[in-house]
Image 1 (cartoon, rainbow, N blue to C red):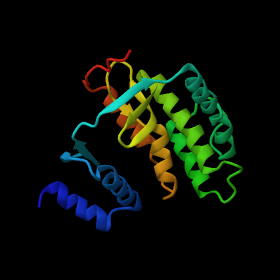
Image 2 (spheres, rainbow, N blue to C red):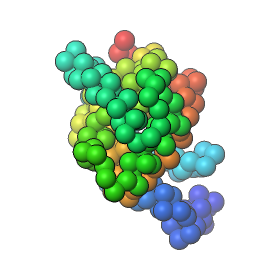
Image 3 (cartoon, rainbow, N blue to C red):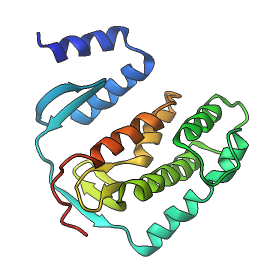
Image 4 (cartoon, rainbow, N blue to C red):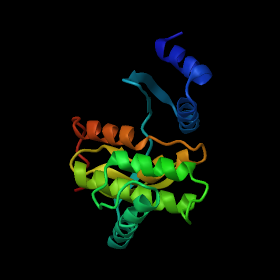
Length: 196
């Protein structure tokens, strides 16, 4: 049994709830795909699959404007969940506010869907501004999703999906690791996006 397989078995049996739910999401994603490689990258499990045909389109002005409008709502969310009144919130403060929302009995009208829209837009826009990215729509055999993509290099993240897939399990504390992962990706030598 390989090292990665042994780690997977251990995480499935003894890992934290976050590890187990991450493995469940990875298993769901890998279902019906040809896995080329599984490896550990620091504390992250990385799986490489055979390329999947996809279409990547920059967002229309109207769609981009809608994201910016939703991102602007983050200040009120941060105030409601006890972190800051500043428009220049930190990723750490975003983690704290989201965790407070998850733990809150009274969510003050912030439904799961509203939180995904506001926090996905705000977190994604922060990454766009900080790492030279743009908003795109990606369509493949699994469906269509909004993502952020490097303008000059092809690395991506899916801010809305990152939140929505964790709400049901009450997971929190993931914004900092995702932000660090995007920062690390921005420093790698990826192929050009070809999409200016």
